Length: 240
Image (tube, rainbow, N blue to C red):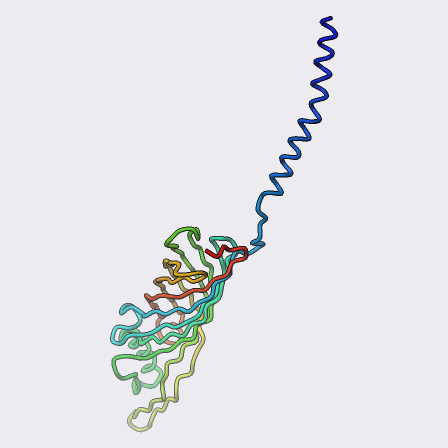
């Protein structure tokens, strides 16, 4: 009798095992089907916008006259917090007397001490074309801080019309100084605040370094403070 009961119990347990395995498999398949699909692919969004800033009165520029920075930027966010992009910007940099004096020294040495720049401000302009990498805080944050580093070319135009000077028994004449291209880099930090669907307004502080010492006597160092307005798109983004 005991043998029959044990055999019956073992048979019932063996019969229940396939049902248990089938139930677990069905539950797992159901959980996979119910989970949301990853609709972001290899990228997580794209943003483009306009930038505006004013150089601070220190180092190379804006000591005697305010400058101006205007540009456009675009960034492809490869992950929710990391992206790469491009910058194109126009800079109006009235350089300081100290920066101008380093150039005057080179100019005097090359023209037998007959020529130098006059006035108190030298109005350089620059066209910047560069790439950047961006690291941003999670997008769920109400205020989203970020850091950015970039490098590229800066085409500097000294905006001169030519000079002439008397060396005593002959005259030295120098035509307009040509625009020259130089490598440079920049750092930026800021904070963005969502204003409406797919739009963010942000404040930013940036530092530009242009390696132009071989032509102008010293490198340009510019600090700027300003803002930007960004428009962004993300695949699968909500419309709240």
